[in-house]
Length: 264
Image 1 (tube, rainbow, N blue to C red):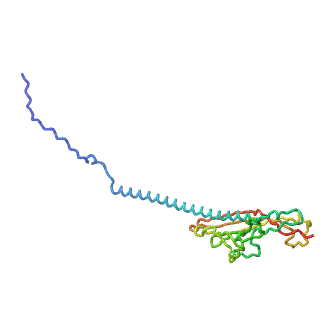
Image 2: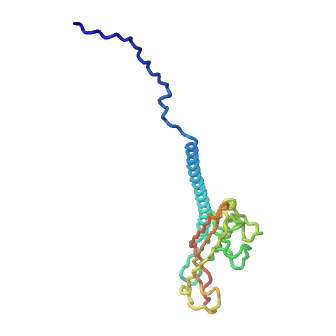
Image 3: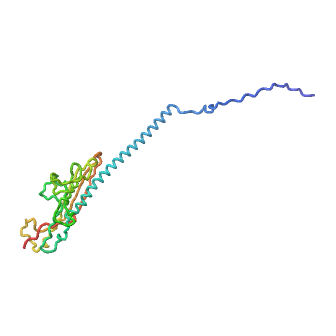
């Protein structure tokens, strides 16, 4: 017997393929909300403010360093110039005439003195606030201190000034001074000049070893060794916190003989 035939079923259509939208795959991905955006902006502003603060602090410190450096350099330049030039004080072109020969004949007096001013000269600048000296610049020695052989240092209206010509120190004398510092950049507040003199007795070199008059200022003869101490104080004209004080000392190379041997 033949098996019974199964009834035929009508063919059914396959379900249509699901159509996927291009943005459907990102349906579960979250974005930035307003709160997150505000937090990011605030964090960025904080970082920028911090960086700007560092830049401003760096520029301020750099400006302060430049002010202190300029102040130190200006004061150092004036101090070095004064000390180097003061070391020449008393030099003259006939130095051999000032040599002690070991008898009663004293060396010839130095026409250029050494340090000025003498005690009887009123500078009008205040004691201890001016340095002055002379030395020869003659190609052929004339044994006279000319106007171009006077030099010095003074403080005038917050500026260091160097004398380049003149025969006196008084303000109304017509001396010529050249500014060494710019008061718009550096304010020099103080100039202190201290002169020290070491006196060596030369009476043992004379024929008579006793002075007839003990009160005679010219007896016994003495060898004078002069020293100069300088102190400068200043501040930056735009930053009062930048202040400096420099000191320097020098010994004059040319000693002087003062006084005379007692007459026999």
